[in-house]
Length: 258
Ligand SMILES: Nc1nc2c(ncn2[C@@H]2O[C@H](COP(=O)(O)OP(=O)(O)O)[C@@H](O)[C@H]2O)c(=O)[nH]1
Ligand SMILES: [Mg+2]
Image 1 (cartoon, helix red, strand yellow):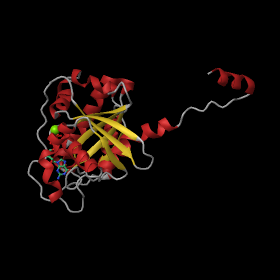
Image 2 (cartoon, rainbow, N blue to C red):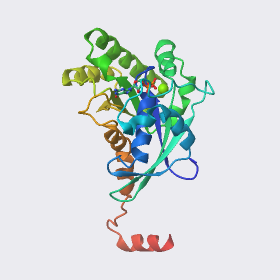
Image 3 (cartoon, rainbow, N blue to C red):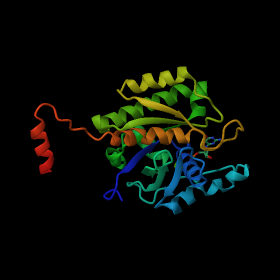
Image 4 (cartoon, rainbow, N blue to C red):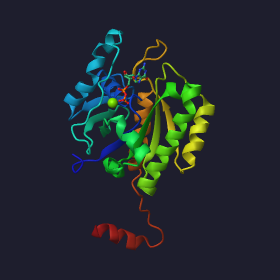
């Protein structure tokens, strides 16, 4: 697929139970129910996989929440990620984006931080954007917060060491927005920790599912998508302009010969 058209590859990292699969399932449910504001579902080459991960959320629309909304992610291959594909059409201008989204087990991120096991993350070199998914409740908890923030720093350090200048743009998807609000001092502390490794991240609070009537299930995911694709769509619009400078005739004949 990637040889035929531009595919935006997203690297999705995060500890087990942080909400990675939930983000993907919710994104699929939003898109397929026409509730991803500003976007329409265009296609998917991995419908079965999306159905599989969002199976537990089937009753989502009924308003009743099952205990376990996503299935624990297991990989058929321990070394190679499988990708989910989603094509979205932007309502404003009809442009399409193809997203390749891997649903990775959290153990991969754990192993990367704990033991530097990086071979499985080779595909990140081809990623356009990284989503680092964090459970917002762990950032609210005074006991857990410091540990979570330092592990985020370690992860940033591992990624920087592994990818150097090729480190893609990082978005920090903070889940459980329905249950825990992330405060600005905490965001500042995360920023400072990441910056030790010269890593910058955009924070996106999300609630792929919601136990709180004030937050729609899927809230914040559209912002995550907008952040993910914005630069790519806007950048490709600005085709380099080749204005003639002084020698206009040379410029014209050059254009004729093209
Ligand atoms: N209420 C609520 N539940 C969530 C949210 N994000 C994830 N969950 C739940 O948290 C659990 C773990 O999420 P999962 O996506 O499986 O974690 P993963 O291991 O990172 O893939 C699941 O039962 C999800 O339904 C959220 O924003 N709000
Ligand atoms: Mg999972």
